[in-house]
Length: 128
Image (cartoon, rainbow, N blue to C red; front, side):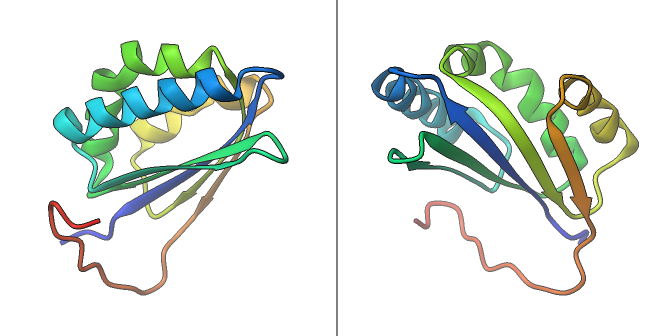
């Protein structure tokens, strides 16, 4: 089984948009829980700094590509309240995934890719 791919995305929440962002993030996450391919999706928020982080764990690059297609209309609601600052990717994403990140990097978003060295997963559907 290939190693998972972890995405940690850092966002700046637009001034005055914290509550709207939180509502949109909850709706998007509920949709992804019901329909998305990823093994794990979480949103963390630091209201004092106005920053949020999206954490996703995917089984492979095909899961990431499927997530992008599925979530695009739902993420527009979330994205109107935030600016993406950086995306840290851990694992070995495909060339197609890397190419998909080009739009963000061309807008000045910092993108890092760090290979995984060692680890294991005990994620079970329904666990939280």
